[in-house]
Length: 308
Image 1 (tube, rainbow, N blue to C red):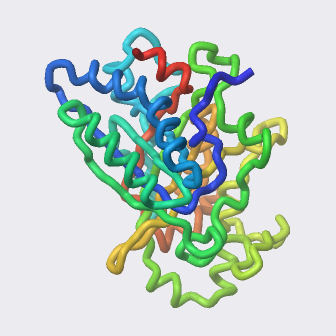
Image 2 (image 1 turned 90 degrees about the vertical axis):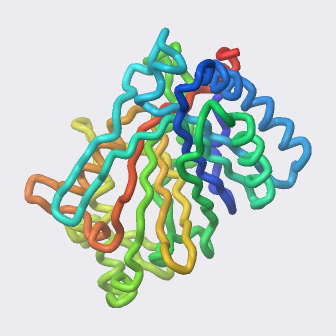
């Protein structure tokens, strides 16, 4: 039985999101204040859900790999480690550590705004807001490249099995290893490419979202590079919570992976950036560039309440 996990870790996609990245201060008592706020989060979520029931509010609160020991030096998730740094020509995966991530999702922007403002105020003096990104559903859940996003996600109970730590690490059961990358798209270059070439880069049709048969995919196709298996032939899955963001100048994707182990994401990222044994890397990374990357652990609600 999984512990009382944070609903945002496994919830279906929402229409709106606020991604809040905080760094802890070194003011006296700052860690104690952060622990207090984290412990209150499950109650705060329920209170706003009661006030705005139609919003379908979800939260994922995650603690950065480098910050964890300041919040809970007594015990650490078994596999929590820094974000991997990769570089292969124009394909890059930088590491930009952040102490706290609060991913607020809902079907209305006002609910995300209300909760984000409340938490930012509660953390004042103990953590500074390093970055805030407003994510939103684009058309029928598409990336701004025009392709449906999250097609490979597990469904139903498989979402829990993929995303949540089990009895392999009992102290952190119901938590999840979370990775975030912010990508900036070069849509001018992408949109100059013929649709068939775009589809070949993804390994999937654009309009009707039909995946190519395996033997028809380019070794550089995104779906080829991210569809990995272990030695026994089992698929290495992650649960994605990515959302587009942007304005008139900059457009991109906030990529979020949750999983019961960090290894699946790390292997996929290496497959995209460095490629396979023959060097076949992800064609998509010629048109979008990661500008940040951070590793976190999102503990269960039970664990958060225990911080009190």
